[in-house]
Image (tube, rainbow, N blue to C red; front, side, top):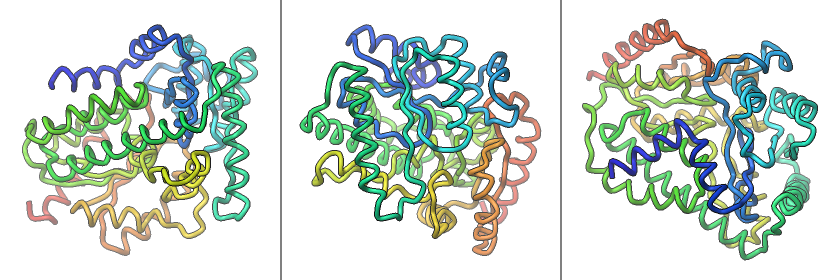
Length: 378
């Protein structure tokens, strides 16, 4: 089981070999998609491998010639990887209308790589509109047609049903992993949990499901660290750079639940398998919970975080604010007011993937965790 765990951690750290091996073994197409919400089931049903492109800690040398300095580190590093040839094994790209930065990068991508197929997934701005479901069904049909042209394989209704079942199983296993993190945080480090979750973004889901199903009973009996002194809920786009998770671990804390875009958000709302397949994916998107990148007139993210903290017995919330992410910045003042009114401590940390020095982060985390430990009487 240790080797199974290490294989997942290695895929998350260096996904290119796993993606290349799948492509060579199947002669299939690889479809890269940018954050955050893309119906992977459509890609899977077309016989292609969905690969999520969230950037990384690479040095930005070429992308700055095309992107503004105030673009977030995710899109800057995605473009950098594209220019460096890191994504040469990727056959097509999907750009969802998540934010201005991603939409801007889509236009730049078309100019820089005119011969590389891409699809713009322009979501309805208002999911509460009565027209949203019909619009999404047309949008997803267009994506299916684009995938069929690119892969040479049109997904039948039966294949799409099968893919939806595989992805629902993936979400169910991920929920078991998240429940284990909360009930026995000593069984894995925060970094291990993050990397296991991230490895799913680069593996064919049947294979990932097999490995995770094998791993879960072993993890439930495993102990790698003391019972944490402080329990945290993490929210934001992603828990990167990953050194932050190691600092939390070293200071005696643990993330026991999250509301991260690269985390729990993409695992919400299993598709309803009683509905026609395309309608099930439309329905799932309309049922996705509160997120800074989705219009929410009720502003339910604060109550969602309060519920997470209560259910997982968390002592405080860690807001990992991606630098230059306007969507998250707009949410923060509302969240801060609601969490403070409820008496739930909150720490804001500004992060970006290219961060290297974590001294100030460590100091602020140490002070925050000490305050929480005193309040929790641990």
